[in-house]
Length: 419
Image 1 (cartoon, helix red, strand yellow):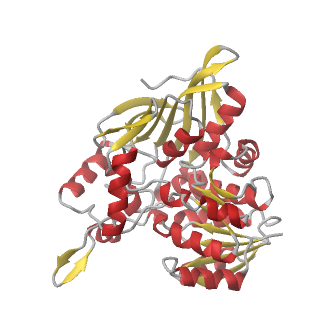
Image 2: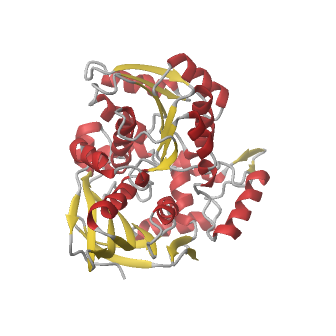
Image 3: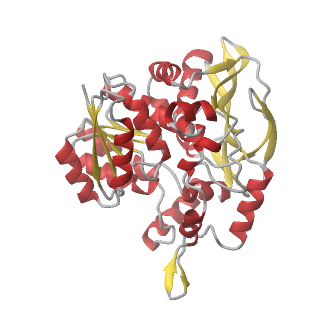
């Protein structure tokens, strides 16, 4: 018996909420809250009569701590699932601390306004000290560790697929497959086709920032930063085929470097088609990816926000997207004194996802782990107070839940390695 407050009602939240409603013996009551209450009402209406979970809705501006606090106090949930934007992580964490409620999200904090002088000063100091320049990092949320520990509360960070499941795969490999891990390569392949000339599979602001930023990886105890999209490899993905992939900075590298310190190298690769890259580079060249306001016809607009309004809504891609995703981790290391390799991954079909929850696979592969992470917290399988990433918990029950609820794992003990 549990009450859960879900903040957010976009594509990923739609999947997470629908999956929660499939496990109504745990998610007995659910409140869906967003800035746009009509979206929450529409989803609740679509689920009416299809689940035993009691659904309610609410309006909340998650940028405002006092509004989130008021909603938590009114609803009295056992857990807050933050499936809004990463810009709002800190305000929702503050509200959870004020109300004594456990917290979880699917992506680490980054600021909406990257030109804010106060944030920029801290960011530039971190760039020099840490050695990477991505706008997103764990430092802002890790600063809450003692607060959550002292309050006896758990904050689970980044419980999507990557980050999230990829970290559970690393914990599983460390627990069952290796005595010592040398290298980790995280491979994210989307082999789907939505038919548009250009669209993003999740929030365009977040997606385009991530892809256009310099790449970086962890090697021999420090960050190595490279120009954006400057390292390209080709890989033959199970059920998808050969795809070009590019080395990106990604948040789980930061936590894995801390929690698997013997790893000599950790990299993240994501597949992109040439058309996507050409469009993105053109948009970047003309300033459309900027977060700095510009004056246009007497009023200020933020270019990337205007671009977001022009692009297809990622939540609308489901019915037209065909193909599969393949996301997983390749390891090298040793077991019982012998060198070994290991690959653990998931293959997910876009159209099968749409048939089940009216979503494409990119939202599905984030929303299902969010539900499974909440399941771990609510059933007492992950309970350590503090602020934690997925690899810090026992991976076995989490991966078993993923197997059961739509993201089963596949394995290879002789994978092709990435050079």
